[in-house]
Image (cartoon, rainbow, N blue to C red; front, side):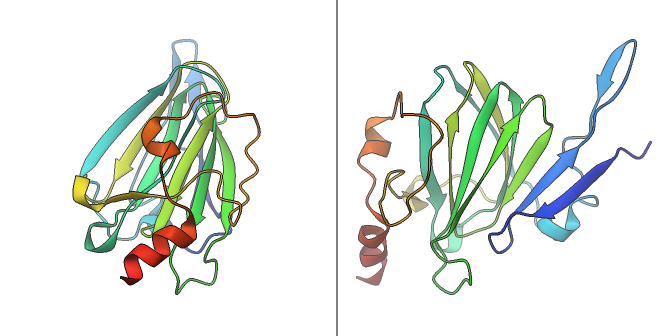
Length: 187
């Protein structure tokens, strides 16, 4: 069986949206969530080394903007398994043609999309439905010392969140502006 799928550039250098199509019959449905061959144009030869899952209870919650920095930077695939989120990528690679640009895509259980986030890009999302659950496929192991983030509401980024922010963790509330983060890596 060769499931129908597509891979489209997202407008951030190296970022893509993948569309999978469930196949169904009277028993239910089946869908391939990831195949390195199918998504090689985005994924390349990277290996998936860690799989994470998140559950966000309240609509309007923002998680982000997070990334791993330096030699521990990872690329990731993100897919919504239940509910719906507005998924955001910010390019934080100074050498990139899309530096400081952001793009968003709605990921939901209903639309069967996934997003590929390359190394050097921050990721975050806002839940659009209660009990939204995301699956993350990472190309590097989580390393707390490499964990970084930038403020979801940095005016320089001007991310147009679709809803008022209902919940935000204390950690995310304390994230620096992009300029603050860039100044910290120049030291």
